[in-house]
Amino acid sequence: MKSPHFSLLPFLLVVLFSLSGTTLAHSHEDFLHCLSLRSAKSDSISRVIYTQNNSSYSSILDASIQNYRFATPATPKPSVIVTPRQTSHIQATIYCSKKYGLQIRIRSGGHDVEGLSYVSEVPFVILDLLNFRAVEVDTKNKVAWVESGATIGELYYRIAEKSKTLAFPAGVCHTVGVGGHFSGGGYGMLMRKYGLAADHVIDAHLIDVNGRIIDRKSMGEDLFWAIRGGGGNTFGIVLAWKVKLVSIPAVVTVFTVNRDLEQNATKIVHRWQYIAHKLPDDIFTDVTITKVNSSQEGKKTIQAAFKALFLGGVDKLIPLIQDRFPELGLVKENCIEMSWVESILYFGGVSTKSSDVLLDRDALPKQFFKLKSDYLKEPIPESGFEGIWRTFSEKEAEFSFMMMVAFGGKMDAIPETELPYPHRAGNLYQASYLVGWSKEENAESQKYISWIRRLYSYMATYVSKSPREAYYNYRDLDIGTNNNGYTSYAQASIWGRKDFKNNFNRLVHVKTVVDPENFFKNEQSIPPISPPLKKKRH
Ligand SMILES: Cc1cc2nc3c(=O)[nH]c(=O)nc-3n(C[C@H](O)[C@H](O)[C@H](O)COP(=O)(O)OP(=O)(O)OC[C@H]3O[C@@H](n4cnc5c(N)ncnc54)[C@H](O)[C@@H]3O)c2cc1C
Ligand SMILES: *[C@@H]1O[C@H](CO)[C@@H](O)[C@H](O)[C@H]1NC(C)=O
Ligand SMILES: *[C@@H]1O[C@H](CO)[C@@H](O)[C@H](O)[C@H]1NC(C)=O
Ligand SMILES: *[C@@H]1O[C@H](CO)[C@@H](O)[C@H](O)[C@H]1NC(C)=O
Ligand SMILES: *[C@@H]1O[C@H](CO)[C@@H](O)[C@H](O)[C@H]1NC(C)=O
Image (cartoon, rainbow, N blue to C red; front, side, top):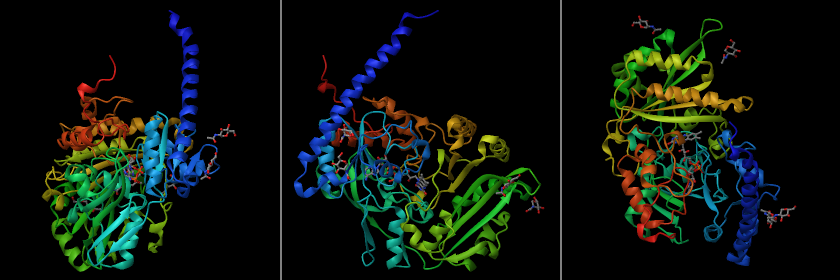
């Protein structure tokens, strides 16, 4: 039966679109006007403002997009991109966005897995911190100040330039930005020895919703706690972090051992689960599962790549692994001694030996992908792995992997409430799953996304429960999102408990104090509790 509403719909849509079109253009121009009024002549703010009229708008927008899923013509684009060169540009952007109802999306390294730093469903401005990227390393006091727009590669490079025995415990992929990375925790190959990047932040400069520049002392310990892992685009704009550096030996050892199903991969991966988290904390290991060509022509098999970083020489590592994990069959030929900064290149998969590549923001391949994460507190039985292999044998899994990252060590020693990141003691490892596809396949992206959701639901039996924990920085909107507009505590707690467990409540409390109107927000930002007495309507 034909509903009478049906024929009205096209008309209504036209009206709605033209209405929002006018308001959009209107607020957009008012916003630009506001920016120029708010900044002194000497500010030259016009040189850091890009609208769709500027020829470099697209190149600025695309420059740091890591997930091409959100770089299509159908992806909502920002009205304006501001690339501030001084704090007054940021303050003006906050003021005028508030005044004209534009949402702000803060972007540092652009690695947000779901594109939240550069995509929004409502009219928005990108505040891109690419010009805030100074790094100052003080080897004498073993600290550094690093501006948000710097990448972890730039930080690593500047440390290594000055010292062979200092390092920083953050991510593997060196193009990741410190702005988002530290805001969500940040882990890498030094995690078992030292913990997370956020565990090493000792001060920060933040611009709050009122445009005030505050540091650890003036923001207070609650807010300083919240910004070290409670998520970006939520509490304010982090300008810079002060971090504590860590000590490492001048020579470290790395290895990669590949085993496929014909080489007992199932048994060895199964065994790894009992061993990896109990190894001395000088050893970090992970396992990457992929589908590869089998030695039998035309067939596929599953390969497990066992990788490790050892903070010491090869002669100590080999007997240790042979004793604790003989099933791996590690031999000297698998191992390479190198400096810590070279190990970053090794694990990042860059073939060059020159650490200059750490300064290159485009050094690593970008792709179309979807990512999900889990934490494991019990080993998966061998039969469980058989089911994972079956899922990987499906054709959608051509460009996919599952990565198992050993926990234990320092992660067991830090209390769950120390920082917002709650996945500490009791985890054997973190698992993450990625599926990628090509540009040509992007029209059928749902096929691949369905595949990874199937894998994720298969894993439910084996992973953490109530809540099923997830890593905030491995952003996954499947686990829950805020509403556009008002978000209730109850709705946000659906995803919030998975990412933050009971720390979620303290985050909501801090947010309510520092940004009660919820100006800084996205689909997965902590909401304030709305003050019941401040109802504006009725
Ligand atoms: C290829 C790849 C490899 C990765 N490898 C690792 C890894 O080894 N270890 C790990 O822990 N994680 C890893 N991640 C996840 C990564 O830590 C997060 O995506 C992180 O949030 C990226 O930070 P960014 O500054 O690059 O991203 P952006 O997209 O710029 O920002 C991410 C979020 O933080 C907000 N934000 C950014 N800057 C600021 C700021 N200055 N102030 C306030 N909010 C801000 C953004 O609005 C957004 O919500 C990886 C991601 C990718 C895509
Ligand atoms: C972008 O264009 C506007 C005019 O439309 C101009 O005022 C501004 O300076 C341009 N921005 C840059 C960075 O060139
Ligand atoms: C962009 O250009 C169009 C025409 O070229 C003009 O009408 C419009 O005002 C410009 N917008 C801005 C923000 O400069
Ligand atoms: C696989 O394991 C069996 C014993 O369980 C062993 O005999 C065999 O050599 C192993 N194969 C490989 C390739 O390691
Ligand atoms: C795998 O095998 C296919 C042919 O069956 C071939 O085209 C492809 O290049 C191989 N891939 C690798 C990485 O060797």
